[in-house]
Image 1 (cartoon, rainbow, N blue to C red):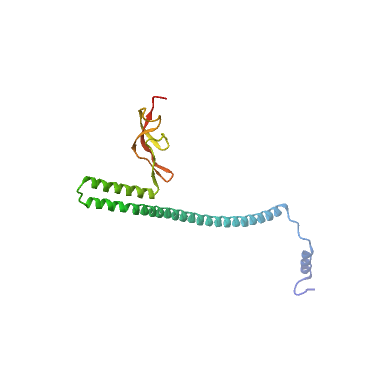
Image 2 (image 1 turned 120 degrees about the vertical axis):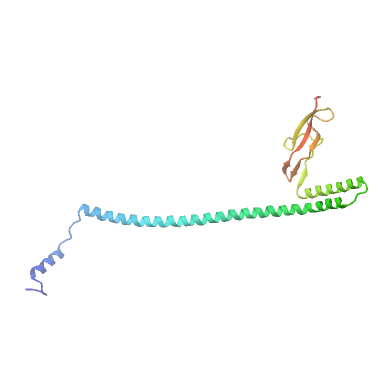
Length: 193
C-alpha cells in the first residue's frame, strides 16, 4: 500500500537511512575538517593582530606628531627667551649710547673735561655690564691660575713672586660663574727660589 503517494519500499528505505548510525569519518576527512577549523582560527587571529597593528601604527603616528609639535614649541619658546634676554640687555646699554651721543655733541673747552666725561661713560658701561652678571677677573699681582688666565709671556723678575701675574694685557671676564674670556697676562718667573 502506498502512503501519501510513496511506495512501502521507498518509505522503508528512508526509515532505514534515518535509523542507521552516521558513517564514521575517515582520517582524511577529519584532517580536512581540522585544517579548515585551523585556517579559520588563524584567519581570526590574523585579523585581530592586523587590527592591533593598525591601532599601534595610528598611536605611533599621533605620538610622533605630538613630539614634533613639542620640539617646535620648545624651540620657539627658547628663541622667545633669547629675544627677551637680548632686549633686556640692550635696554641696559641704551643709556650709555645716549651718553656717548651727548658727549660728542657737546663742545668741550678743556681736554680734561672731555676725559672726565668719557670716564663717567666708561663707569656707566661697566655698571650696566655688572647688572647683566659680567664680572672682571682679578689679575695683576694674583697667582697665575690656568683656568682663569692665559699666559702670553714669562718675565724674569724679582719684583713679583714666582708664578704671579706681572701685567694684564687684556682683561678677562666671567658671566656669573662661567668663564667668558680668560685674562691675557704676563707671568713672573723668579730666578730666586
